[in-house]
Figure 1 (cartoon, rainbow, N blue to C red):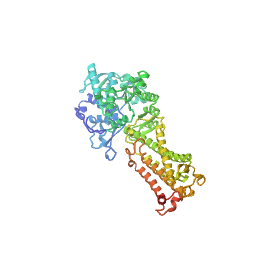
Figure 2 (tube, rainbow, N blue to C red; figure 1 turned 60 degrees about the vertical axis):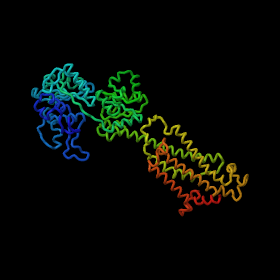
Figure 3 (cartoon, rainbow, N blue to C red; figure 1 turned 180 degrees about the horizontal axis):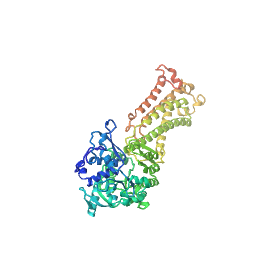
Figure 4 (tube, one colour; figure 1 turned 120 degrees about the horizontal axis):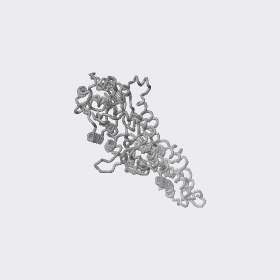
Length: 617
């Protein structure tokens, strides 16, 4: 069948457009057009001025039924209207079928019989008010209810074993392409119950409901003794990006379980196309089960199959099967995300850990039941959300671990100096400066880290794992202790250069009592005023620089600075540069004409440090 999407413009190979239906209104092709048009609530809408996102032809209704409308239009032969306007030619033949044969009753779709049908009158082969039953449904369940088959020329033959096997083989061939197959059949007026032959809308209004039509349990009996007209294969291609998205899921340790109402051959073929199942050429055993087949297995075997690694496919599944599967997965401590768009999917969406509804094709009921709604109905958006979620989690880890390691360093510096009896290397003002200016901007900028290169190759973490693991806590404890030791070390090294021993420094409060400083140096010049501020400036600068370098290496929690450089996060570069420039400005305040700035922070200007150092030399 030629044509693109929902455009009614196209032809069917081997069938003369319009002429086949016109010349042979009793043939199989005409009946296929009739069933496609009447067993249908969809229609094609034409737009005369398509532009931007407005398409020339679009559907109103279910995609499968809209595809049948397109088929009826391409077969043609019913409408006499000729127009070049999109709005006129969109559903011309379908509208003609529906006007000529108004529906008198609908036997709604049922998942047990997997078919639906309509009663429609005014056929050339029946009396003026005689109804025919037109049926569409799953070929594997519709074919056993057929006793005859209609040929292209309109002749009817008995449906023997050989012909059945040919139809079954053709169904399997179409399903493996993969195409979604639908069987089409009719039941002539003479084979209907007498009360159904002349049943009309007027009867429905008078008697409320027909006794056979009021109970859905009778539908399978009515849809029996059918005449097979033909079969259609509908291509429902996956989006091009889905196959790569499924591969990303596999790399990320996310299992994909496909649950569909399609036949097994169709489901397996689609699953292979999008990388859910391995290619047939590899010869791997595939895990594809029909819903009934799977749930007939012992409970232990069901759980074992679900627990085994790898993707799975469930075909010919019912909405209740989805709930059962989710419950079983949750019993195995799996975190399940369920997608759905129909009313019947709502219970499963609500039961899943994460219910995901379709924003475009989804019903309002499914959207209300879901936790998340996809605005574009695209599976790859879910995978992108997983990647973004992992990135956010990693950034939270980087933020928290950076602040904790910095605080451990500050605590370690104060604690170590106190335990050793040294003067305080940092004042309260210094700690406030570090926490507000030096730690704040870099920590905030870490929230803008890009995803790590291997973020979608990491296996899922346990749901009960703390944001800071034992290994991370140990790693940052060591890092914090190193920062604290380096801070105190720079402070102590200044006094060692002044000729003060560690023993003397530990008893600095007894200076001039139990020990005396070197010649030319007083206790006040060592431990009071500028004498204390100079080594504190050194220790504070060491602490600031180490924390800023630590921020630059925190772009990735697990990768080194060489593997993932800070240039990948411009906000981090700015968040490190700004505090560093502020700190340098305070230290060099005398050079900037603000000699009192450093003093207000309890620091010595860097120029003074140089002068003091030169005097010491």
